[in-house]
Amino acid sequence: MTQALIRQARQADLESVLDLWVEMMAFHAQLDRRFRPSPDGREHFRDTLQEWIGDDRCCVLVAESNGQLVGYTIGRLAENPPVLEPRLYGHVSDICVTPAWRRRQVGRRLFIALREWLQQRGCSTVQLHVAAQNPAAQAFWREMGFSPFTSRMWLDLEPQEAKQSSDPGSREV
Image 1 (cartoon, helix red, strand yellow):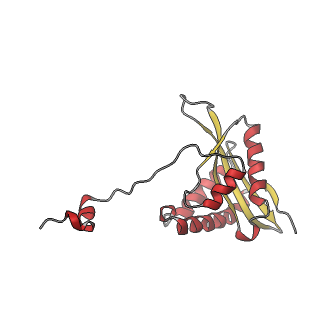
Image 2 (tube, one colour; image 1 turned 180 degrees about the vertical axis):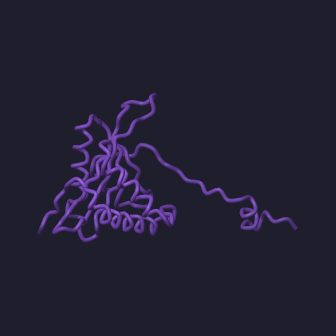
Image 3 (cartoon, rainbow, N blue to C red; image 1 turned 90 degrees about the vertical axis):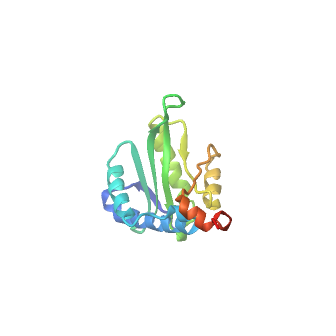
């Protein structure tokens, strides 16, 4: 069994990383509609990814096997508000491994390399968001040593007319 090589992403990897991002977003959108990317989401993410690949406060790593990208992760240096310590922390925004390469330590190795990058830059903590509807991702991050910290919540605001028309008990007679 071949092992994937973990390395820094290059601009030449951009389209392959974008393909993996689209795959990841489609998977999450199936779990929860709130992850549905905008129609021009790929283009926006392309612009952001191009910046991140050249930014010394960001780390984009890829996993490569036989010339094909099989996974990636993105982390960056971030700062808590001045009222919280530590001020500097690492933030993981993405990790994706293609289905054929899951359960082969690729995600673990990507994160370990990212964690080392963050530690070398003075981070003593790492934060991330994980989808509530993705128990596999939650289990992965717990295996990596993460524990719950906050809950991010969501409320759909409907126009008052839509609420009244959808609630039969609120109709005027």
